[in-house]
Every structure is written in C-alpha cells, then in structure tokens.
Amino acid sequence: MKLLGVSLFFATTSASSVLSAAELIKDETDRNKSFITWGVQVEEFEYRYSDDDDELAVWNADLFYGTDELKVRLLSKGEYSLTEDKYEGLENQIVGQIPISSFFDAKAGVRFDSPNGPDRAYAVAGISGLAPQWFEVDANLFLSDEGNWSSSIDAEYEVLFTNYLVLTANLDATAAFNEDSEIGVGEGLVSTETGLRLSYDVVDRLFSPYIGVVYERKYGDSADLAVDEGNSTSNWLGVLGARFVF
Image: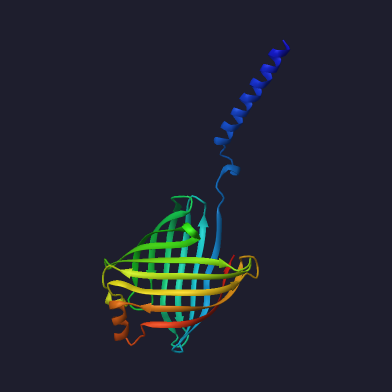
C-alpha cells in the first residue's frame, strides 16, 4: 500500500511537470511575449578637417523600434560643408529588419537621397550582422527610381586596448552597375572611405568621444566626373567627434 502511494506521488509529480512545460509553451501572457525596445545610436557625430582646408560636419545615426523578431530602423547619414555652407550628401533610409541566423539580420526598405544634385529614391535590400573574427558587416543592394543598380558594403572592427580605450577601423565601399552622371556616379567601383578612430568610453559604451583620421577616394569614371565638377578625387581628413547611445 505504501509502495502504491509512492508510485502515485511520482506519477502525479511527473504529470504536473509535463503540464507545466506544456503550459509554458502555450503561455501567451506578457511574460512570454517579446520585449519591444527602442533607442538611438549615433555611430559618428564628428567634425572633419581635410588636407585642402575643407571643414565638414558629419553624422551617421540610427533610430530603431521593435522586437528581436522585427525591428523598424530609420537611418540617416550626411555630410555638411562648413566651408561652403551646403550639403555634400544626405541619405535617409527606413527599413524593416528580421533575423535570418544567430548573427545576421536581413533588411528591406527604401532610401531617399537629397539635396546634393537631383534627388534619388531607392529600393533597398541587405544584410547586417557579425561576421567571423568579430567583423561588423553591413551590405546593401540598391535599385534607384532611374532604374540604376548599385551596392555598398561597410565593415568595422574594434580593438580593445583596455576596457575603455578602443581603436575602431572601418572600410566603406560603394560600387555601381550603371552610370548615373547626374549625381556623379560612374560604372564600377565608385568610392571608398577608410577610417581609424581612437575612442574612450566615458560612460560605459553610452558616450565615447574620439579622435581619428579618414581617407576618402573616388575611382574610375566617378573620379573623372568629380574632376569635371572641379572636385578632388582623394582626401585625408582629421576627425574629432563622439559616438553615443540613448
């Protein structure tokens, strides 16, 4: 009789465990729902001084809202010439982003470029994430409203000298599959930007001022178009700025 009681006890406990697991799987309460997060990341907010005495204000920012399964991101990149008091470039994107692996997300959306030259609108598709050896990668394919295809890839790598002192190396490259001379884009490799920035994390990774150097270069037909417009095809720039998150 005592043995029967013990058996019933374990059977009841086992059934209860199975039931709890099943309940957890079917749990549709707030505790089992994905958290909605939002924030602003400003990767670059900086002053640049070039070797031909140009002064630029530059930013690269990202506003995001959503869950781990789906995020909406508003991205903005721009260069404003303080010397000539005009935009050198302004690019805004709004994309939806979903995970496709443990380390990469796929994204799709639209991009608008203004006001440097004729405005352009683009369809955007791409991936972003963490490649082997901890390289951050962001790759995109664009189709403009003029029917022209182009692509870009941004790669970034961080070296931690200490928990606070960080050297960040980045390479941004753009290429075009069609010429769009109205906006100074030739077919082939269009331009690259290589940068080194040494930052110090004042408040965790929330606020990090930095100094650095950037090298910009145009290639091929895009370089020829720049020369025709009276612009230089390569520049060294000193950089002073900060990255922050809130």
